[in-house]
Length: 429
RNA sequence: GUGGCCGUAGUUCAGCGGUAGAGCGCCAGAUUGUGAUUCUGGUUGUCGCGGGUUCGAAUCCCGUCGGUCACCCCA
Image 1 (cartoon, rainbow, N blue to C red):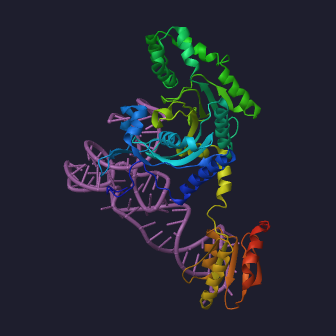
Image 2 (cartoon, rainbow, N blue to C red):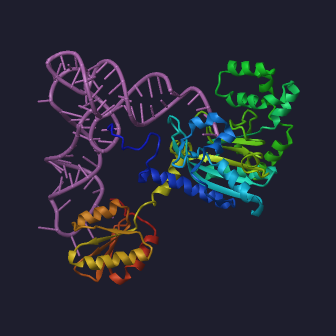
Image 3 (cartoon, rainbow, N blue to C red):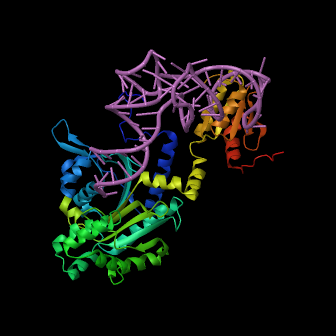
């Protein structure tokens, strides 16, 4: 890298075709699962008033935003997530929308922070939300959906786990422990950090609130067995045959302040429980941002961690490679053996393309061998050689290594037939 | 914001005070109308950038930019 300043900004991503393919593969599965769950795609603004995020999360968050004053003097920020925009959009129109509102979005998000594995300054986030439905049926559907996203990408039971909890179990705990309700948010932050922090630190903070690490651990060990909302969720998911993916873990509360009910996170089991997706219920956010009382829940998954997870999981990677084998490949290549026939070759290329066949050819005169090599490199299965015998042309199956003579006018049909026939390589001697 | 490690050919890397290297890739030929493999030949550099030490720096020192990983944070 030279020191000139025309390179991409740190943490921003340039998708060359090979990395763009993986991105598109993720998008394809994201959209497909959303479709099967009856979700509609929407899109919000990339740039928002800085206040939209400050209002929800406080001034601290502004430090991690790309924010600036625009030419009109407005304080604006690139979105670090999409839920606030969604809450506003849904709240503004919810009276004319049939409930439940089931929307999803795949959007670029931006955070100003040093990059590391799985985290950059620019990333895509897949967000699925259900608004206007207060019952746990919606939460259960989202959890099932997140599992199906994982399965569609080739992950299996044992690769990942959904850790499920409900924030509402904790006020009850605090009350019994004699801790004032006003300490709930501080308490939840301690719970959220317990797994990352040294035990003594958490223990100290819990003691300050008037409870203890032992009491919390004991409560978590109880697994919310007597908390009806959790049991309802578990029964719902069991009916779908998904119990094997779920593990109740009351220690999951999620860092965000706006969650108000069930919360869940998906973890990569192999890589030290790396979080790959998360979500939960946020019944107050639409009121806070859009002024409409609209219960809601949702989950999000970023493209970077899940992309790494696919790369690091052999069977998921194999599934991607299989998909990739036919992605970005041409189907037919027209070899021009006699330059005098270039106009006829162009007509044939056009005919093939109009028939929906991915077709390419050499822009400049080249030896037949060179052109055949190009056909191979571009992934073509069919090679059409057009030369002085025109309108007779040769159609070769580059996998079977068999060639036949056809009439030029029959090319689209003949190529289509070849492409749909079984790909049988010749027996090796 | 803090710290560790790394920046050499298109790419992966070796060299670590004394002529800038290898594998892979790429190009050409063997093969003038046919792809794999093989063989032969060839191409490729501001050694990230700037300064310093030295007779001499890719190599040592300082700075800087970039990458990467971890911390912080995690919406």
